[in-house]
Image (cartoon, rainbow, N blue to C red; front, side, top):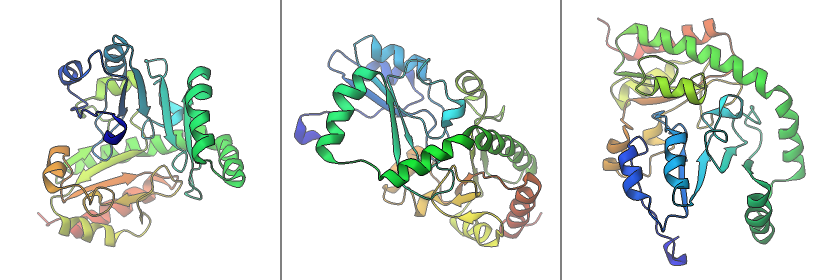
Length: 275
């Protein structure tokens, strides 16, 4: 966006001092994921919004991992909340779409003219399909979160994984903040099993969980970020973000928790050295 005169400053989302130093009188907008992809860091929405609003800047939050069911982003200070509707809203990976939530003034004066002039609108069929999916959104997401919470605890109990990352676990660095902002950990967790080779062995041994880049689906899905979603990032940036060769992102679906746990434990036993 530099050719349009827009300057962008990158900050560590967890570092409120970095936010405070970066936000100044010229700041017009701040943007962040409420839960980062794929390492699941939880950003303090209220604190960042307070800093941004002190200079009159807008707060835009990508809220996909928090889900529309559990998030309190707008009461916490977000001016605009965006969702990839391809994820939890559709819930079955059938179509591309997005949602922009904001005040009537923002939607009518900024978003609507932009959409009219650029043509970025989803098809009527996709819109109908996603509106229909909203009817089951709450039921689906709550069931997925319950299973994700159970599985994260079982995976952490193994003790032979490099990391188990899930905002709903007390061991997560932002667990207390997660409880304030959501009250639950979401439908996505991540594990690190030490190397790319082990990660591929584990994924190939799975029988129930699918290998794909989507998330929020009714089917459980596993992704290797280093070689897929974040493969274009230079290695130094991957290192900075904690995206290691052994990191796997797991989106929990609607299958039985017992079946998913058996699938995960069996595949991990194949990939990890036996004690």
